[in-house]
Length: 405
Image (cartoon, rainbow, N blue to C red; front, side, top):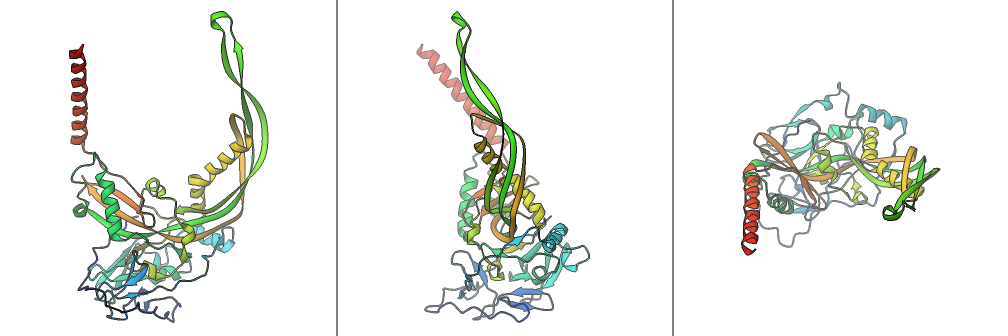
């Protein structure tokens, strides 16, 4: 599903930070939902105005506070000691929501295009697809949709792992990554003029479960025998196979599965591990100034994805260890999961999208660890030049060797 990229953030007349001014206290929650920020009932949106100048605050990954891009004042985000809750995947109510995925087609909040009026400048902001937090294209004010979080047919976000890598660090990491791609076209490396760079909270389901697996198979024990006579006498390694059965137990915690589409799942998977244990109870303040997407696959489908990507391979390794021997054959295995619990989380990713030669290429940065993964084009000219240079070098070595002889 396509995603609209936000324009560069206008910093406005930002000056040096006020001297000696402590961070402003957190604003009181609005009466509508008890959540932080200012709720705009006409548009069903939420913003975070600065108590000092009225401009809208953004979450600053470098300091972990809300910062005003106009007057540079800051506001702390209250820290909660509450744990991010878990849900039983087998709960009938939750399962029913999960099978429907996002929203029903009849729900206005599920529209592929949702327009709201910016409460700061009056311009129209369009939310497309699963986008739930963005910036006004005219004044760069952060805007969040409240209807998605409150919609009765969607799961509310349980927690968020905030951005820890800021824009400056992300650009340094991605520039280092791009410059290390030797065979990338020179034009591709000019991503600042070719690409769109955004900070996005993607939807994930995180699973905690215990797997009980019954298996049957064969254990192979190697042994050696001496065969042949005379010059043909030699040692061979053979395997003695024994039928085995057993049951193993695996405990899994914080297994994350991406719940969004439209990205390269292999590249995003390589951003792991995610520090799920650092997740904080959801508050929109962490999303201020960043993009966010709600989920496109339900928790049931997410668990099947988690099994394919991580859980099943771990179970297979445990079974092989339990069988023992030098070789193992697994003829059958069946796992049951109890308990099977999940959380709905937002995890931070910096996303660079570059269109080169009419093809999109995306590079991803883990917004906590700074890990970079992505795809890039290849320069045919550079590859041919390198091959020719290698051939010339080999030919020169051959000629030199022959001359010495």
